[in-house]
Length: 143
Image 1 (cartoon, rainbow, N blue to C red):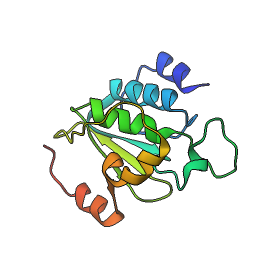
Image 2: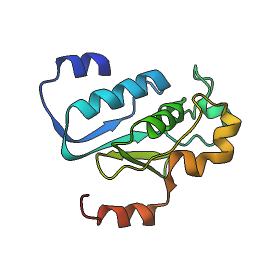
Image 3: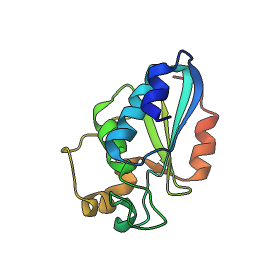
């Protein structure tokens, strides 16, 4: 079933939700919003493929084997508009985004942007961190 069908039928809530589906920004955004609606307090959403290696990897529709889609566009939009979420991307495996309801980590952007602007500013736009920073975050108390 599709993720939309799953969330429509779902009656459960979750501590951890992993999003790695269609890889189209509109669907990823919908999956994240649907996941937030069923996320337990203190829960975490992980979004795969937030950090494409190059421009060709993010082109929709898919045109090559290694492909992230334009997941990064949904990520950047939510970081710019959802001030109730703490969002960062761990710099592993084309970027694993982590979302938690915690102290806001806000950012301002001007709507849609071309890949070249994203590429130049990816560290800030994604809130990209390395694995050691991620491991430190795991030990932080809830805020």
